[in-house]
Image 1 (tube, rainbow, N blue to C red):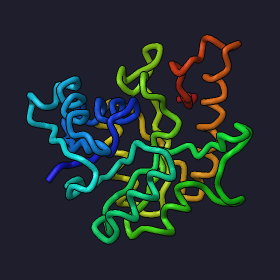
Image 2: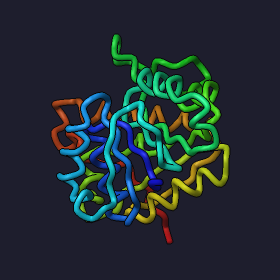
Image 3: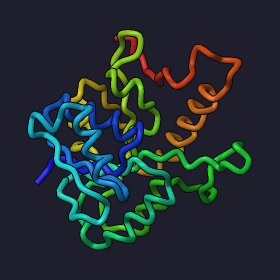
Image 4: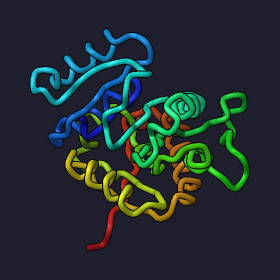
Length: 218
């Protein structure tokens, strides 16, 4: 058994796996269809030499109690459909920002809902929203400008939310629980805004290397 299963081998999978390994968590990396990609990422992260990382492909048995799908929303829906009841009771972390790429003017989810809430409707897993406001590069580094990254977390299941908060804290990140799963609506809008800033060539200071950070008075 692994602590965490990460589905995907792209930049966000690399970033989240980096933090998980830094926190001493065991990780199962599942590539979409080419195990060599998972093996290459495991070697890059150094997890294969420590025994913290195992690899496979989508469709293999999921060993992690926390499942993080580093994929787009439609792929997340397909993953939940493929694994069905095998995910029941697991913590499923939705990191998506469901942008309407046809207009790039909003989110492609029903009004008054969010990607996370839509996924919860089709799975017996306990869906938690997290990591959608953190970019891959800063996650690999674990900081931006010498400051730790905030991980904003929303969910209806207290135990599942705590599991994700513990994962973030172990990886030297700052977990902030923002409320129930419906708060994912605000997190997805915030993630969209962060993407808009970084995709704007007239704002080169952002360019995927920024972070959303909440600073308290204390």
